Image 1 (tube, rainbow, N blue to C red):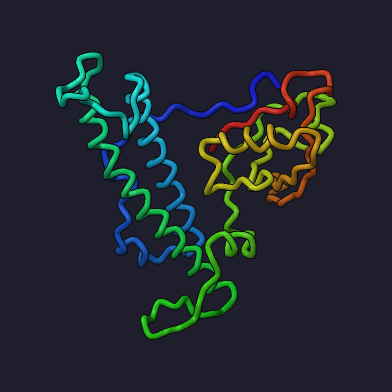
Image 2: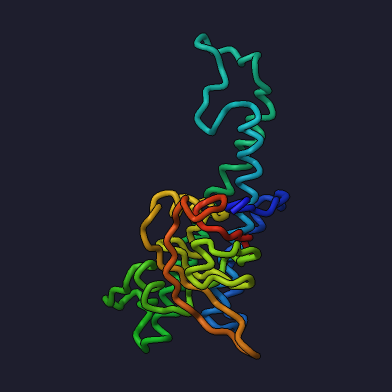
Length: 238
C-alpha cells in the first residue's frame, strides 16, 4: 500500500459556526438518523477548524499550555506572542463548542435508540429511567454506523484483497474505530499498527445492483504479503 491514509485539507470555517447546536434544528422534521448524521458532519467541520488552528501553534513550536513569558514575566522574544494569543483565543471557544456538540450527539443517539426500541428518552425531568451510554447505543443500533471512509485502491494479493475488500467499499467500522472517533483516519492507522498479524473486523457498505449491502469482512494486517504497507489498500475520508 503506497499510502495508508490520505486526509483532505480543510480550510478553517468561521469560528463557532460548525458547532452551532441550536435546539431549533432538532424539530425541523428530519428523522433522528438524519439528525445524527448532520451532527457528525458538523463535528467533522469543527475538528477540521480546530486542527487548522492547532497547526498554527505547531509552526511556532508551542501548544495551548506553553508559557509565553520569561521567568521574570516579560513576553518571550523568540516567538510571535500576539499571534499565538490570538490563535489560542479562537481555539478555546471552539473546544467548548465541541464539548457541547458531543453532548448533543449523545442525546441524539439516545433519542434514536428510544425510537428503535420504543422506550422513553428520559426527556421528562420527572422520569427516572436510565438510558444506555452512547457507545452502547451505537453498538446496538447498526444504522448509527455511518460511513466515514471509502476504498479507492486495492492491490492484488494484498491482505485487503484476500479479505474481500473492493474499490468503492464505504467503511462503517474498522475494528474499534467508527464515524464518531476516527479522527481523520488517524485512529484507523493506529488500529492497523496495533493489530499486525491479528484479525480486524471491518464493516463495509457495498453497492450491489440498485442498492447497498453491509458486509462484515475479516482483515489481517501483515507486512510479508509482497507489497508496501500492511493492508494493500488506500482509504479516503468522507
